[in-house]
Image (cartoon, rainbow, N blue to C red; front, side, top):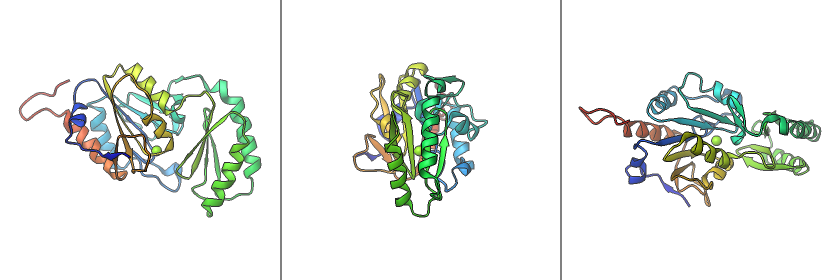
Length: 258
Ligand SMILES: [Mg+2]
């Protein structure tokens, strides 16, 4: 079980030292989860705080959305990396490439459309590198979840990762948030990292074996989380961002350490 994150602890203060990479999930971490997934966006406050953090640290956003989708919602922020599809979709470059999986994912999409046709409130999103079946809009959530799970179980070569009123389908052998975090650690050359996430696919990242120390924070504690720390709710992430920025603010009358 994770413990509440102590922002006065040595582990937290160490993040202020040079060489820290900040990695953040999007939905449920930076942005409130909303009924219409297309309406998810940063609040003005979160955007301002994230801008302050990104001016002081290299920041990566690691999301289940496609990189283009999540990147569009972070427009204007000086982020170093935007990685989508749970780690498979690197903005500006393909990791293993959509081409390798495209045929399989297109077959899954067709099979799911046939199986789930006529069930209201279900939305099949093909992200090129993965599929997310959304059922947040279904009136009978339990029935929708069961139908989606049954349909997904029949797909060949799919890793099925449930989320908050979604089911994510990733090709076996494709990147996940754990491998993406390892890759970010490598390409950034960071000495340590902070990762904040809120959902099942983030647990893969919390469990990742990394070559550098990491502070893992789950938004919304659950029993059995692999994250060492948690914060209670999405709004607490704003408090973390503010605290991170302050760690790199210059002492009164002094200069900021780089
Ligand atoms: Mg999330």
